[in-house]
Image (cartoon, rainbow, N blue to C red; front, side, top):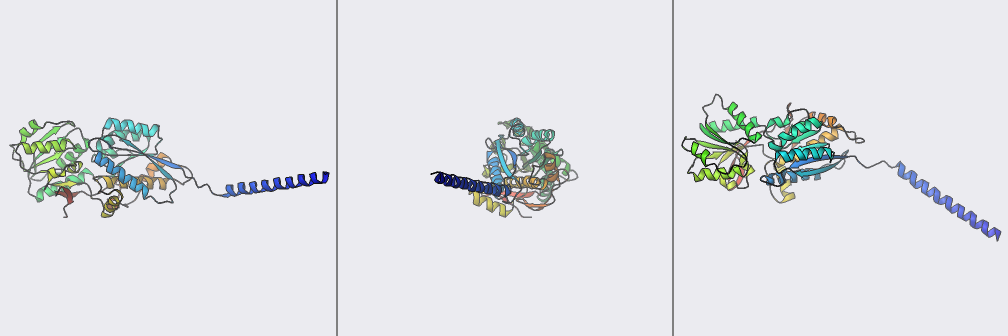
Length: 375
């Protein structure tokens, strides 16, 4: 009996020792495996996802998600995108930027358009966090070390606009300008500089604020001045309301713009009208976007696509994959990016002011669609 008990005890001990050896072996095997988890980089993104220009904001969001989907799998970091809706309202954009920084602990910010970009820029500068805007005509949005803009500079628009006016022998202009939009102010300021020394004259500049719905007084002041063309610098819905009231007043002269027409989802209002626009997207981007979403990208979507890739490129360059790079390191890496190929073309560069230098184009509305006029 005692022998049987001894045998059982010995067998139990052997089993326990064997199990312990197996457990230790598994533990050692696991510890020998490299840690494959990656640090997560948070990118805070504020766009007009509702409101008057929601179609542009939604298209920009789609483009950013497409860029994220196409990121290489072997990156050093994972990327979390936090989207917020600023409704194209500067005050709301400022609140969102502070929330993204303090609550979401964003490592970089992306914004859309001059109105919101203008208020986020000083916030980003104070917080020392990379901020890239993908739709700002106002180049001052890129002021400071931490702010960048990926959008055709206003001087490119105005230079081409003057050339097109001279080519078409247009000499007398009337401007309608949404004065509380800093992008509009920047565009007009550059045009006034570039038209000097030409035979072009601005007969009148009619200024109005966002929210204006009755333009009758403005139109009455200029309808008999003999303008060759009316230049409309406004966003939706002011742009459409103004255009309809100009026609209702019996004015038949053509209308044009630098960039504004494609803020509208009523392009038929501008049928047959030429205008100057920001850089065209590549056909490759248009095809990829259309395949993914079943519709062509809106104005500014290609810029949004490139912005996400630029931010990721900066982070990957700044970090070693073990620790997250600091905000200053990310900013420095962004500023050091050489020329790159993107959705807006090849050999794009970031100038010394932090603005991606892309070229303006002349477009026309044909059959309710925006078509680029080849030079």
